[in-house]
Length: 133
Figure 1 (cartoon, rainbow, N blue to C red):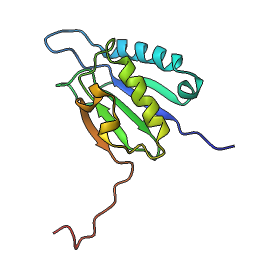
Figure 2 (figure 1 turned 90 degrees about the horizontal axis):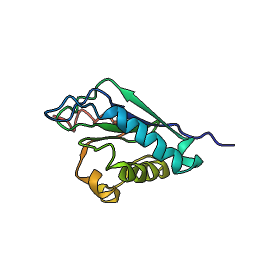
Figure 3 (figure 1 turned 90 degrees about the vertical axis):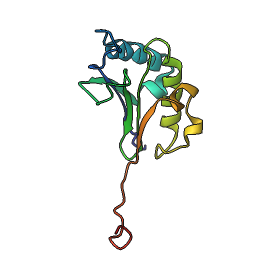
Figure 4 (figure 1 turned 45 degrees about the horizontal axis):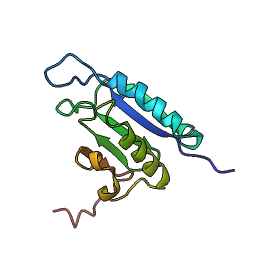
Protein backbone atom coordinates (compact mmCIF):
# COMPACT_ATOMS: atom_id res chain seq x y z
CA UNK A 1 0.00 0.00 0.00
CA UNK A 2 1.49 3.36 -1.05
CA UNK A 3 1.83 6.33 1.21
CA UNK A 4 -0.31 9.35 0.34
CA UNK A 5 1.07 12.85 0.38
CA UNK A 6 -0.46 15.20 2.90
CA UNK A 7 -1.54 18.39 1.20
CA UNK A 8 -1.79 21.59 3.20
CA UNK A 9 -3.83 24.68 2.55
CA UNK A 10 -2.95 27.58 4.79
CA UNK A 11 -4.86 30.83 5.01
CA UNK A 12 -3.78 34.12 6.50
CA UNK A 13 -5.94 35.08 9.47
CA UNK A 14 -4.27 38.50 9.88
CA UNK A 15 -5.19 39.99 6.48
CA UNK A 16 -7.85 42.70 6.56
CA UNK A 17 -9.98 43.83 3.67
CA UNK A 18 -8.66 47.18 2.49
CA UNK A 19 -10.21 50.01 4.48
CA UNK A 20 -11.94 47.63 6.90
CA UNK A 21 -11.36 45.78 10.16
CA UNK A 22 -12.85 42.64 8.59
CA UNK A 23 -10.46 39.66 8.66
CA UNK A 24 -11.81 37.29 5.98
CA UNK A 25 -9.35 34.45 6.61
CA UNK A 26 -11.36 32.80 9.37
CA UNK A 27 -14.46 32.74 7.17
CA UNK A 28 -12.43 31.35 4.26
CA UNK A 29 -11.13 28.51 6.45
CA UNK A 30 -14.69 27.57 7.42
CA UNK A 31 -16.05 27.81 3.87
CA UNK A 32 -13.15 25.92 2.29
CA UNK A 33 -13.20 23.12 4.86
CA UNK A 34 -16.89 22.52 4.09
CA UNK A 35 -16.31 22.66 0.33
CA UNK A 36 -13.31 20.28 0.40
CA UNK A 37 -15.29 17.88 2.58
CA UNK A 38 -18.21 18.05 0.12
CA UNK A 39 -15.82 17.33 -2.77
CA UNK A 40 -15.38 13.79 -1.45
CA UNK A 41 -13.23 11.64 0.79
CA UNK A 42 -10.38 11.31 -1.73
CA UNK A 43 -9.74 15.04 -1.51
CA UNK A 44 -10.85 15.65 2.09
CA UNK A 45 -8.65 12.87 3.48
CA UNK A 46 -5.50 14.26 1.85
CA UNK A 47 -5.89 17.97 2.72
CA UNK A 48 -5.51 19.84 5.98
CA UNK A 49 -6.71 23.43 6.10
CA UNK A 50 -5.43 25.79 8.75
CA UNK A 51 -4.86 29.42 9.56
CA UNK A 52 -1.48 31.13 9.86
CA UNK A 53 -0.63 34.46 11.46
CA UNK A 54 0.77 36.24 8.39
CA UNK A 55 2.07 35.51 4.91
CA UNK A 56 3.02 39.11 4.02
CA UNK A 57 0.23 39.34 1.45
CA UNK A 58 -1.37 42.34 3.13
CA UNK A 59 -1.85 44.24 -0.13
CA UNK A 60 -3.86 41.34 -1.54
CA UNK A 61 -6.08 40.00 1.26
CA UNK A 62 -7.19 37.27 1.72
CA UNK A 63 -4.00 35.22 1.10
CA UNK A 64 -4.00 31.44 0.68
CA UNK A 65 -1.24 28.90 0.07
CA UNK A 66 -1.11 25.32 -1.18
CA UNK A 67 1.82 23.12 -0.15
CA UNK A 68 2.77 19.44 0.00
CA UNK A 69 6.01 17.54 0.50
CA UNK A 70 8.06 17.30 -2.70
CA UNK A 71 5.60 19.52 -4.58
CA UNK A 72 5.65 23.05 -5.89
CA UNK A 73 3.94 25.48 -3.50
CA UNK A 74 1.49 28.19 -4.59
CA UNK A 75 0.40 31.46 -3.03
CA UNK A 76 -2.70 33.37 -4.12
CA UNK A 77 -4.05 36.68 -2.93
CA UNK A 78 -7.14 38.85 -3.15
CA UNK A 79 -9.42 35.88 -2.49
CA UNK A 80 -13.08 36.39 -1.59
CA UNK A 81 -14.16 33.81 1.02
CA UNK A 82 -17.67 33.29 -0.29
CA UNK A 83 -17.17 33.94 -4.01
CA UNK A 84 -13.99 32.01 -4.86
CA UNK A 85 -14.66 28.65 -3.18
CA UNK A 86 -15.39 26.76 -6.41
CA UNK A 87 -12.13 27.98 -7.96
CA UNK A 88 -10.15 27.01 -4.84
CA UNK A 89 -11.66 23.51 -4.80
CA UNK A 90 -10.92 23.14 -8.54
CA UNK A 91 -7.31 24.19 -7.89
CA UNK A 92 -7.07 21.74 -4.97
CA UNK A 93 -8.18 18.91 -7.29
CA UNK A 94 -5.65 19.97 -9.93
CA UNK A 95 -2.86 20.29 -7.36
CA UNK A 96 -3.72 16.94 -5.83
CA UNK A 97 -3.61 15.21 -9.23
CA UNK A 98 -0.12 16.40 -10.25
CA UNK A 99 2.71 14.36 -8.76
CA UNK A 100 5.15 17.27 -8.46
CA UNK A 101 2.58 20.06 -8.29
CA UNK A 102 4.11 21.88 -11.28
CA UNK A 103 1.70 22.82 -14.07
CA UNK A 104 1.00 25.68 -16.42
CA UNK A 105 -0.87 28.71 -15.17
CA UNK A 106 -3.23 28.26 -18.10
CA UNK A 107 -4.70 25.27 -16.22
CA UNK A 108 -5.57 27.33 -13.14
CA UNK A 109 -9.19 28.32 -12.62
CA UNK A 110 -9.75 31.75 -14.22
CA UNK A 111 -9.74 33.88 -11.06
CA UNK A 112 -6.56 32.30 -9.71
CA UNK A 113 -4.66 32.94 -12.95
CA UNK A 114 -4.86 36.64 -12.20
CA UNK A 115 -4.27 36.41 -8.44
CA UNK A 116 -1.11 34.30 -8.25
CA UNK A 117 1.41 35.83 -5.87
CA UNK A 118 4.03 33.06 -6.07
CA UNK A 119 4.84 29.61 -7.40
CA UNK A 120 7.75 28.14 -5.44
CA UNK A 121 9.49 25.03 -6.81
CA UNK A 122 9.79 22.09 -4.45
CA UNK A 123 13.51 21.85 -5.06
CA UNK A 124 15.92 24.60 -5.92
CA UNK A 125 19.02 23.48 -7.76
CA UNK A 126 22.22 25.34 -7.06
CA UNK A 127 23.64 26.90 -10.19
CA UNK A 128 27.17 26.06 -11.16
CA UNK A 129 29.47 28.91 -10.04
CA UNK A 130 30.82 29.14 -13.58
CA UNK A 131 27.33 30.01 -14.86
CA UNK A 132 26.49 32.61 -12.22
CA UNK A 133 29.12 35.32 -12.61
